[in-house]
Image (cartoon, rainbow, N blue to C red):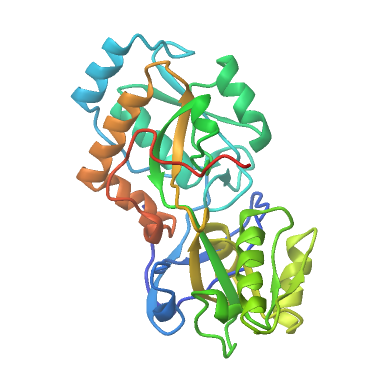
Length: 331
């Protein structure tokens, strides 16, 4: 798997999605994001990613129960003998282009490979802009999507889901910051925090901020940026105290510099919780077979090996669930 390990202090990164192209080499800290109070002090393994086109992916043997389920489901793949999976290759380590600028790699691609293997099908991975996947799934252009899709009750009306990862957001600060933990509303009082406009993390921060102000604590100062470079500079220069955004991409982006650290995580749907899941068109019969394959990979250890390979062990699930509770509809 081309994984090199050594001891290093956990590092984190800017909380915006990083557009990663070919020729980029980075390190990522595999951290326990569910224990933010220890994250800044404990040491963890560092993974050097293989970003080349030759991935030597972790594979799964065909799962007889999944194959049988697929045969009896009535589901017909778009291409005979293949599972066509769409992903958006713009957020490392989830999905990105290898250093040949052509080959799709990343955590979502590796998990798609496990699912296709479990179903006894060849993987046909396809790139697309994230905004284009709903129409692509509904129109039958793609069989399945793995692209950091959070389960919501509204989406469940059109798609069937099989969960495969926790949805976590992370707070990141400078490596030498005196801030060691951000776990609840009082911890953000008086801080200047970078956050994406219109995002779930902004809604969480606003709710915490309102709670603090009502309690007589200092308000949060919000900083918004259109690009990751400006946000990164603001954090490193001390203009911002923290950056709050997607944990997976933040950790990856920062690992190359070691200039920031993780000090806390929050579920992406706070105060509700909902996982990340593979999705397919509602009622087409595929999701039951996908779920069987994912649970076989979880039980067999291949799933854990993929998440470890991409530094996402903290976001692992104990089992995959079909159509789990999702984030509620917006009122």
